[in-house]
Length: 97
Image (cartoon, rainbow, N blue to C red; front, side, top):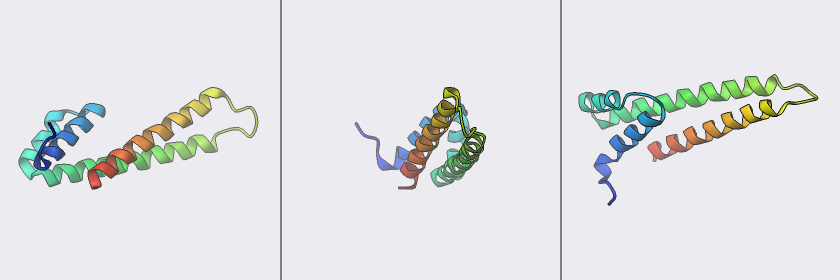
């Protein structure tokens, strides 16, 4: 059974907390103190910061690639960053809509 729309942000925050090694209680405490909108804004801001940080790291790794003889582990690290950026952007889009 789907959760009512009013409970959805808490579920999203709980899932985000579990995926990002934060304490679920911290997110729920924020919801209790400041309301769901405040916790959602904090999560959105955290996702935006994570995306900025990952994109900067991606740019650094891409700039560090040699012109010749690129090693597989270098490409794998770049692909992992691209995947993580994509997951976080999807999570951000889900929260913003």
